[in-house]
Image (cartoon, rainbow, N blue to C red; front, top):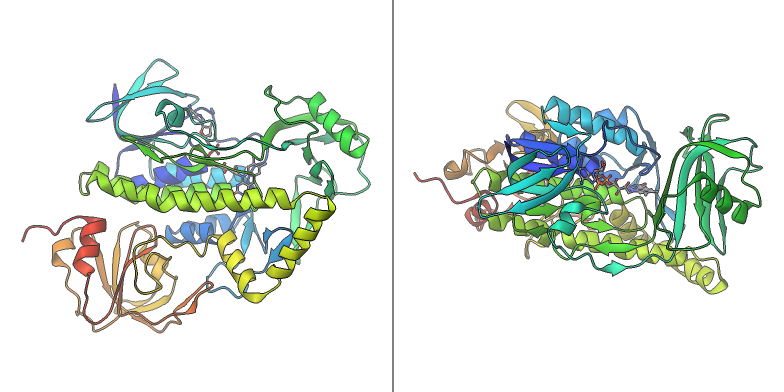
Amino acid sequence: MTNHAVVIAGGGPTGLMLAGELALAGVDVAIVERRASQELAGSRAGGLHSRTIEVFDQRGIADRFLAEGQKAQAIGFAGVHFDLSGFPTRHPYSLGLRQNHIERILAGWVDELKVPIYRGIEVTGFAQDDTGVDVELSDGRSLRAQYLVGCDGGRSLVRKAAGIAFPGSDPTTSNLIAEAELAETPPEWGIRRDALGIHALGRVEYEIRNGEIVYADHGPVGVLVTEQHVGQTTEPTLSDLSAALITVYGTDYGIHSPTSISRFTDAARQAASYRKGRALIAGDAAHVHPPDGGQGLQTGVQDAVNLGWKLARVAKGTSPESLLDTYHAERHPIGARVLRNTMASIVLRREDERTKALRDTIAELLGMDEPRRRFAAMMSGLDIHYDLGEGHPLLGRRMPDLDLVTENGPLRVFTLLHDAVPILLNLGEPGGLDIASWADRVRLFDAKCVGPWELPVLGAVAAPNAVLIRPDGYVAWVGDLTRLGLAGALTTWFGPPAAA
Ligand SMILES: Cc1cc2nc3c(=O)[nH]c(=O)nc-3n(C[C@H](O)[C@H](O)[C@H](O)COP(=O)(O)OP(=O)(O)OC[C@H]3O[C@@H](n4cnc5c(N)ncnc54)[C@H](O)[C@@H]3O)c2cc1C
């Protein structure tokens, strides 16, 4: 039996990100992935939102995505588009980049970090005991690990086998999404709405010019079509797609040669617990919801970044298991919020007169400055606030990527996070902070920062004297001249002081 400290079931965006985080922390991690290669049939996520780009920037890999994608203002709610240009971030935009490219880039990073991936193999079951987990594989082998993480998508075997409940709402709409060839060119590309729902036709290849999508004039076509009935349980076929197109457009435009056809619904479900003993779940395994607002991949990647450093510490024995409970405590409310706004979004899509009136009313509200900023920050993930208690507004929020001046020259805050280690940034008197008892775990930097200290939505905040930044980029302690609470925060997140 092969041993690893952590086995991840599923090498989609969430599993890949988690593997990278664990490998950076020096944990022996392996992925088991059902697909024989990283190739993804069909299109799913269409890009990255601001906070996810920041998260990649924290690891020094944002440029890989930026080099391939197209920047756009692509955040919206209820048909209202938001412009992030004024937000205090280095990435005040979304990035148009299809999920297959996102996965390829992430897989390249994970490969550099030498994470083994057992490809073409499924996790078929597991059994946990006091010291670890036996993970059964479809090729008859098994793996032994301290922890198993299910990043195995919405139908997660790990979630089901762990007996974790998945409460939520059943589907009310069903959509087919496909890539195929059309024999005839439709009179118009783009989105169509009717009483049945939302539909869209567009060339797979496109460019964003001056913020507008401009489709290529040849090549395969992406099709999104709402089906007449909900509840189909068989895999969708070309004739299902053709029938759905005829219902909506009166013709199927001679659709043929599909390279992918899949079905998704507006079911919204969230795991009751993100952990059961030594089994954890993240990404779609923990929450499924409609794709409105393009939040699924973002939420999964950010689950992984929240869990990664915590699981690394626990697996290495440097923090108690209770640290893992903060993963559920912090991420479950974020997932619940995504479910709530996507469910609302589905209702607001309806085309009856009353819903149109409601949509117009919401659009009017979102035309006002404060609601617009709040929703833009929510949909982009920039406003995420983990409840770490009362205190300075930075506490529990993302550390801004400010310019620092250190004795070695200028530096960005995010550069300090590339290795995913905790950082204590002393912005006061150089040498004024001493954390000798944590020096093996936490890096202390003396720096000067001219600011401005500004947070999305909240605006300007008081410049702190010192900040303790977790490896996921969230602020765990904010210092004033007294340093009150620093030892407590260091102990909570990074373990007790080393014996002198
Ligand atoms: C139509 C559509 C549009 C979307 N648009 C967006 C968008 O614009 N923005 C956005 O952020 N999100 C979007 N999403 C959601 C996004 O695609 C998902 O949230 C994201 O893929 C979740 O990543 P994941 O790694 O958690 O799960 P998945 O991507 O589902 O990956 C799970 C992986 O686990 C593997 N696997 C499954 N079972 C096993 C097993 N037993 N053993 C081993 N391997 C296993 C699978 O092969 C897969 O590789 C969209 C989704 C759909 C359907």
